[in-house]
Amino acid sequence: MKNDGQEQNATCVRWGLSTMTSFTDQLSDSNDAYVKSFDAHDVPGRAGVHLLLLTCMDSRIVPHAVLGLEVGDMKVIRNAGAQLNPEVERDIVLGSYLLDCDNIVIMAHTRCAMASLSIADVKETLARLSGLDFSTFEPRMIENQEEKLRRDVATLLANPLLKNDVKVQGAIYDVDSGKVNWIC
Ligand SMILES: [Zn+2]
Image (tube, rainbow, N blue to C red; front, side, top):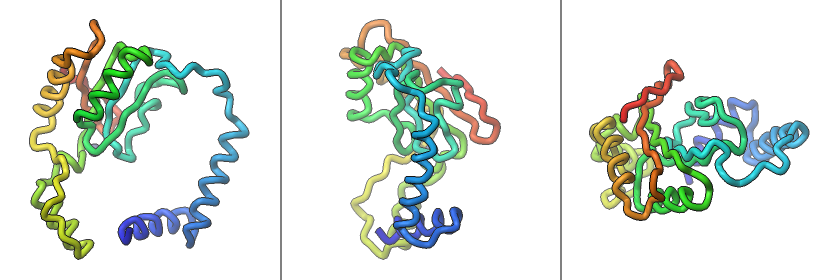
């Protein structure tokens, strides 16, 4: 919670704000503006271009903008490092049958924190910042990003429950150029 507060304060400072209430007020004001120009009425809940993207939670990635897509076009699942795991895999299987997701793209990115720090370093840093015991905390750090991406694509393709003919591809987004490089 301590860290959340620090993070929030940093954002508040950027927005010229000082309290949590005004942070929410700012979000609410921004949303009011969005509502005024909102024109996505009656957009179907299925993926318009039959695409599901699994990508990292990194704030430099704006998924729809990166791929030139509009509201309603694709499903997006995000986590730390764009990593396949059993829960994500279940969501993708579900999306393949029920949400028209016939194309799955797993998109990692350059300069991803999950692929540049060791588990030991992360645990030590968190323990130092918080004063808490992080010895049993196991973040899913990535040792070799490209190899992990290929493995996740292969794992998903080998899932016997995934809908037939679903295409799965792996890519790495360059956060410094905006370019999506297709890996597998
Ligand atoms: Zn990342």
